[in-house]
Amino acid sequence: MKPGFRHVFCAVDDGAYWVMFDARDGKPVVQVVQASAYDLAGFYRSKGYTVVETGQGQPLRGPFAVANCVGLCKAICAIRAPFALTPFQLFKHLMRKRP
Image (cartoon, rainbow, N blue to C red; front, side, top):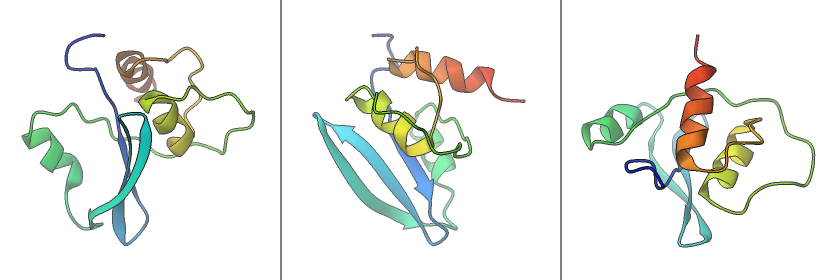
């Protein structure tokens, strides 16, 4: 895999807290990490992470989802990107969708 893009996780603002969804070591981890007012994207950028801020899409239909970190993030954020199977492919897909 491309260096710097070996893993992906997502954080969702539920209105009160940032909730992180991460497929660590093959098992999903769901964790409340901070209050919504906290600049979570800024925190991760300061740590050297590549951060892409995006909105949540419409709910997906269909049973197919790759059981890896990319599949989890695509399911949580309702991202329609059937050919994005690696973190870098997902990054490229999200960057193409930016205005």
